[in-house]
Length: 160
Image 1 (tube, rainbow, N blue to C red):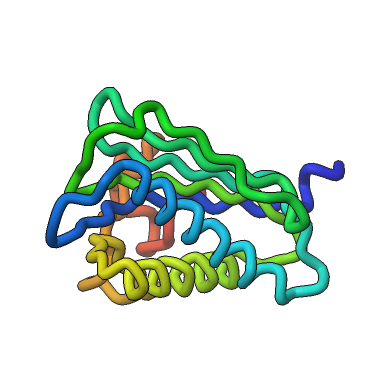
Image 2: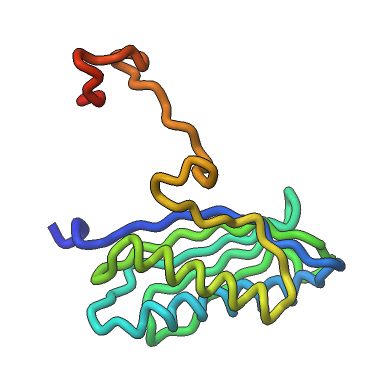
């Protein structure tokens, strides 16, 4: 029952620099991003962090893992190899928190991402979608596996 109070947010985006960045700097960028998100959600008194994780993939064999389970604890960070540099990092973010709506969590994610990109002069392919705006929807609606997208009686929406 306690777990039902947590909201999950999972987002993937690519961060790109105009020039190659050393792996340890990517680690700093990841920690900065997570800290920015945690600071944003921490402004709400009711928020409890279940687990916030990040993964920055720099290459097939090189990545950075980030983790936080409390606002009062430092961000744990593990880098596979401090050697090397990369122009892009694929960020996978997963936040499990309670006391916050999914919309607010997305808003705080976006704010943290914007701040990180601004401070470290990065570009991102992340685009916030607007509900109902067909031009910004990333994923097309999938056909129902039961009726396979066939029209329902009187054009009713699928209830399967």
